[in-house]
Image (cartoon, rainbow, N blue to C red):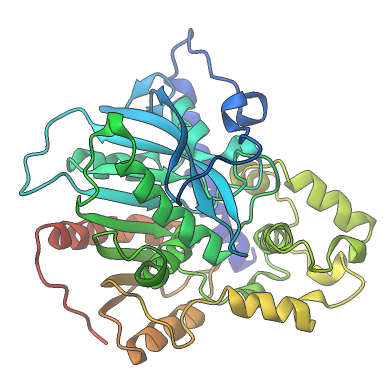
Length: 407
């Protein structure tokens, strides 16, 4: 058996086990709400209302669920808020604000965590603001662990995930700004009763790790008023060009295809569709409404290469190289807040060397950075292995303890 296939099966098994478990425990009378593509809530007003990034456009109380019919012990609201895309244009993003029903017993105000999701897929039905209402979001248990600490959590859907258009998957600036604006939005939702000066943090893994890293790197310039105490960034795909080399021809090629689609969505001027052959157009059209669990379970695009679908080497053209560089973390810039960055030594999805490069570049730029590697044999398992350490690190930040880096 090929090593990539064996390790990939671990992720597929974990996801499948979760979905089977929640389905078997679902009450027979459970009725799911309409998916985003059928729900008017996800249709942004045109034109967008006047306002600042983070202003609430609309809100709706919902029930957040760990599994179908198993509610989290939190009040929850689905929101649509103003944000900014990668080209600096205003846009509308959806998300979920969750506040524990129990009183916060820690020191000071209740902390607010901006939770940046990992790869969910390109389809609107993959949006966590929908998945959390039907109990089928694979990161619900991690989100709930923060709620159990008494922390409020806001989960962004990112740009065009749920809302119309193709999700701008792996476009770092858009994702980081969506995370920061979700924190603003959480404190501007009167129902949540979260003061603007509430202590804040951001956390995420994989796509979410990149989003958290971008939020940390952009915060000082984009949202300097936010009292962000730190950022957890795990499994970070910091350099898309380097990550692409490992994904091309691998079991996880569909992630590379999705990233190409995401960049094309953010930057329509990039050449892409006109260079796809018939097989490429069919795969991209098929994947555009998939969630990652479906794509992995069905092996879509497994062991394919970009050259199988394109008539030119697009990724190495000047236009694509420019956008790849624009969405590369590090490169002399540094986070304005302390960061806990971690990675798996044997990560088969997100190349470990490029994560080490980010660590070195952030350190060289003067970041307050804790770096840790885990001897886990698979990408998803590193998220599980680091969960306790990451939460302890956040707990210390909210307690006012000084962050000690190891650069």
